[in-house]
Length: 241
Length: 241
Image (cartoon, rainbow over the protein chains, first blue to last red):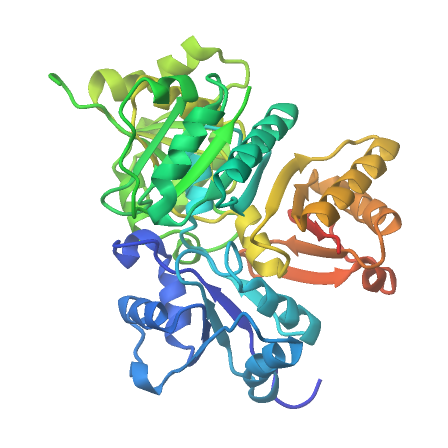
């Protein structure tokens, strides 16, 4: 190979909420991030805050921070990766919260990096999906993440019954999320719909001082006041038996 | 509540291979781990090595390191959690590699902690499942981890076809692992069984200097020499289209 070596695409995790860097990322993530000047991000405002928090030497206004538009086709994505291929510069991909390319639109850019031959380097950091699964005590040997469930009430109940049946058939932990202002509605539908013996874990405000992780049977959840979940990032996990 | 407050169950990630702590865990994980003297572990030898690597002030021979036996019933698991309930001591749970209670037997202990009211505290660290998913460029908005697949050759091929069909139907990335000495056999069965358009990611030696992550279509994998995978920890991911 001749010319400039190809730069790498670093996948940089972003904190899940108010938490010091010393609890969310290894030192090496801060060091690597501080050497990068080209960033592709889900949300520019969040990314700037995170770069500041990580102590990027900046100055921030000199960094090239580009929002990843959902509408980009392959040509558009390839243009974002050009600094790595043409100039050998490393590029950082950042999500709005948590690990890029998981439960966010970043995977398409990573896929293009593989096609173009840009090495992909995932870095260790916080993921609500992984931390919630660890903390749930539900089956960690078989699990599935489903993203958002339907908004329509009847479709939501149907989907929850499907997920519960699939969980029972395969012993599989089912993970899903909701827009935070609809968390309490999802909770009510869950406890109304699922079997009393099914276990439900709620994992909210992970990695922050308000972290709260509780696993109970649907029957036990029904016997106590509904927990406060509104506008708090929450991961829902269920396992039917 | 009166008496000693309940200790907490910390879920401590273990490195995936040869890599400095500064790349695998936040500083706070080292600090918290260094304050714990009671450990429940998948493998005592690995756990001692990791505690040394993390710089636990020890001395190591004074620590209470108990292997988590698969055969323990609830009474046995509750006895392991007794130091938290009776003496208010924090307990550390460690896997052989990666994050405890994910793809290992630790989830049963976490489940008992929830039943007994011992707070569960998952810590950030390396997970081959999560890092492989991030690095694959495959769908991170819907994915499932299936652990080990069948050993019998015909059953393995059947299972791969099932996983591929399910992936196509739901747009779901399918993740699985194999005992390292059988990795190359699994690869051969994958490329022989799956559709040429299905994408396969191999993610091996994650977080180490030998990290290697490649995503190609089955058709493209077929056109090149089989990669060396024997005795190297590898995560397999596929997405059918």
